[in-house]
Length: 214
Image 1 (tube, rainbow, N blue to C red):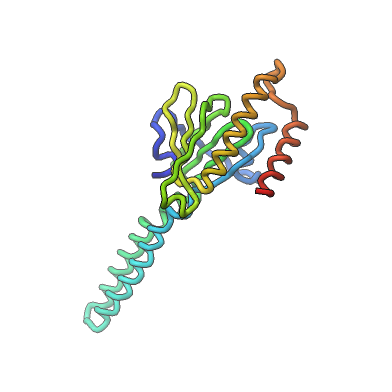
Image 2: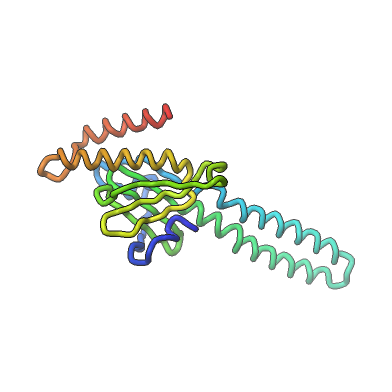
């Protein structure tokens, strides 16, 4: 299941990204917003596409060798090549592109999920709406170092994001951000900005230092 695969249709909205010189996802951030976590799905979702690629290449090579001495081997080779390319594009290249263009992002203001190339979909969850953050991973996920992140937000069903790398670490960081956001909102000023530009920069430096030590 993909990151957005478990979301209801009502919560997923289309997102069109404009070309620019700012690195992704910095071009999506608001003034003063900083990225805390930026992850692609865990690479284990690529194991099956890679195995399929190897099987297709191996089987195609074997069949090509079998018909090499036949009179119609040229047509057979063309057919095998076309079939092999089609399978590789469908079952290997497409999942690879889907993996590369799927982003799970935690910022100082929200959780962002983006997926797709031509038909791009996205979801934003403001930290202020998050009630709890949980994770779960079975023996296989623990072996690969990934798992499912479960976010419960106000008035919505829990949202599940599968194949998150270092899910326990991500859950801890997200919980800390939600807790800090709630504390800052409770003690913020009336302008609606929970802390100024200098404070944002200082908090970002502290987070990066904590992550480097982790």
